[in-house]
Length: 424
RNA sequence: GGAGAGGUGGCUGAGUGGUUGAAAGCGGCGGUCUCGAAAACCGUUGUAGGGGCAACUCUAUCGAGGGUUCGAAUCCCUCCUUCUCCGCCA
Image 1 (cartoon, rainbow, N blue to C red):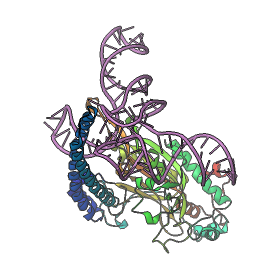
Image 2: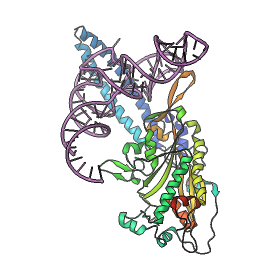
Image 3: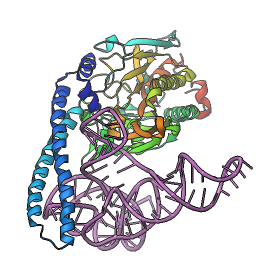
Image 4: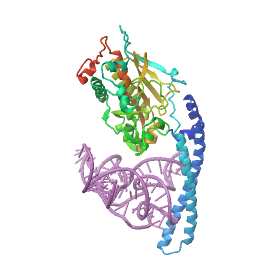
């Protein structure tokens, strides 16, 4: 969530930034007004509490000396009633502000390219080459079926549309990819974790996934638990309500999980095979760091994600998302897209974002910062997330690019020690 | 799922209605001492919000949220969580 003080002190700047994102500004205007009322209520309530505290102390003294205090008591009874009324109002207004802020996105960084839609995103890098095939390349679904390594039909029988079944060498290849990526990111300094994949509402809120995107989430009503759409949620919550020491930052994690997305509202779009599935596998990277270094960390994480693709020899490009297209919690965001030779288009395989203090404010993830004069104060850490990487679309790109005229698929060099075979 | 016992500051641990933000100990930080260190001694040491240029000050906070009361760490209710025993499953 945004810092209410920024809205309080710099409403116009906030509005301008939101307009760049194509957001409506009435919510922050309402927050601005409600905040004024809120401060007023706090002042009045606290003043009365101060009175009540001191008089209560007097009453205690009188009682100890066995002196009648009925008059003060009845007076304080009124004061207490008034406090209760003010605090009730305060609770209402707090809830209102909180609800409004739950739908206001992070502010874009000044370096983010201006734009309205994904067409305005800026390509910043391209790596590798497209293959020339002497035959008509099969798409990944055909390859999977031909080699009997992917079975989308049976997956549908098991779970409905939008799920995958990996078989034999397909399953081995997937496992190899995951192990390879975890090993690589471990070398890059990320501490490996295995997290829960079902999380509480509170955890989802801390990651800013609900209430805004509740419709996109799998939710288990009986237990009030959500299936994570990304390991970002679980990993981020490792340090919810904690205070880091400045010297232990940055703290970096990588973790493999299944990810679950309802993909509501995208029916009929990209339905083929892996292109859009409800469950996929992903190695996620998370960095907690000081605000001063977060944009450097963003570049570093981007390199760590790209490094995987280069070692796998996958043709990819990096695009920087424009102000109109960056994610809800992000202030700056890069997408990495891999090339599908069969679809003849780019597929998003990773997204690397700096979410600044937007999530940490909700999650209460802070660090102790020492200031001049030996004093220290706590400040919100910056939290970054990046896929390093998601396997499903990577699998599409890899299978298609590495297919041979005999209908087989070459396993990338770096994976062979993991798979135990070099050809499928 | 059933029965019972707990959840207090960074940690250990006192505290059952009235100077308790909270004893004591440990740890951390600063200082005295020392060539230096240890020991000893002295001081200091949570978080968040409000007001103030600041010194500072007020408010909240003893798992969470409600309630009773002039006043709640302490009494009541709901929830979460930990531990023990039984059952069930692996």
